[in-house]
Image 1 (tube, rainbow, N blue to C red):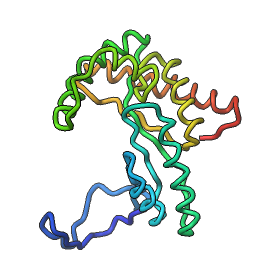
Image 2: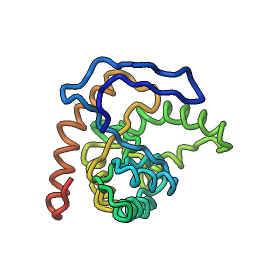
Image 3: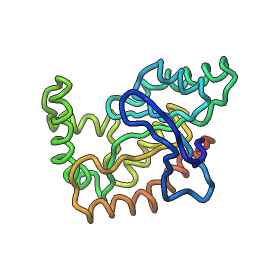
Image 4: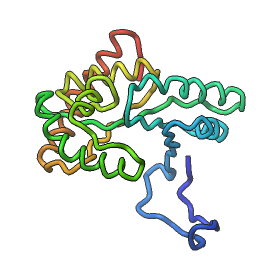
Length: 204
């Protein structure tokens, strides 16, 4: 948690800050701070050492491979004597009325962004088969409200996380489709995830 007060700071990569303030301010007077980690054990341990909440960025592959990081965070917090906050995760996704519609909306823009990043990292261009496989078995939460809700609930159960954030802006989607995705996420996906988790005693 960061208090919203003027900051004086000096580093090596930018000009120093002298009584710098940020507006607008929150009603609470502080900013809740999460540390985003993409798979570095050292980053997980550092987050625990400072007693900050952990947000795991899962953008590809099966989410269950991150379970050891959740365990490491909790064990490290215990050893440091800090607080192990409920862990969060975020992954890309998109919701439409049907699975097919969601995939067709996302595919062109997602491939463009993924190939641009991949070119810098030495990855081959993404194929449609890889995209479809990532939807079925990996960390793309793309589909109808029921499909996405079932997949989120499985990930929350598997990783025992307390928060799930959906990244729905990867690629150039039409504004109307984005608005529909947000509407479906709030009115159908989230209530359904809560229902699914309540049915097996999970809490989030």
